[in-house]
Image (cartoon, rainbow, N blue to C red; front, side, top):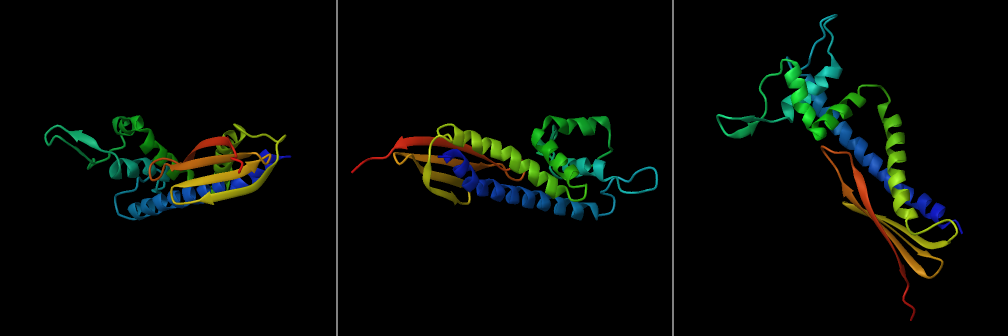
Length: 196
């Protein structure tokens, strides 16, 4: 009995590794942002006190380094060369969910100990997706044996024998990366075992 719980406990390692990968990716983005901030004239400086406005500087960083505008004269997409912090500049990038996602990631990292809370929320959200894939074919009224969890560069797989008669398989394909949050897209199946 408790097949679903047992497989969920074993498969949790997949989500933990995914969280490690996502947080490392976010830290790489923050490192690049910090290097960009260190260059004179890049950061937005607040009017009062002359301190760096990290919140708005995150938007400027993504705007200047990732956003592209179509140049009618050259017929090509090019990165902007100036940023005046106008409404037009701030809203132009708002249509790109991927770029705004990067801005939000950088803003998340402004607070101290951000990674602890982020990891907790990330794991919880991704466990919901994993549990949905696992629960599609199995329940706690069944029993599981030979539970095996395998992870690789671009995927993860959970296999188990259910009630001694069925082979359960859930495969996660890794998606996301530099611009989008890492996540798995799951497929699962339950097939009878061939008797010899």
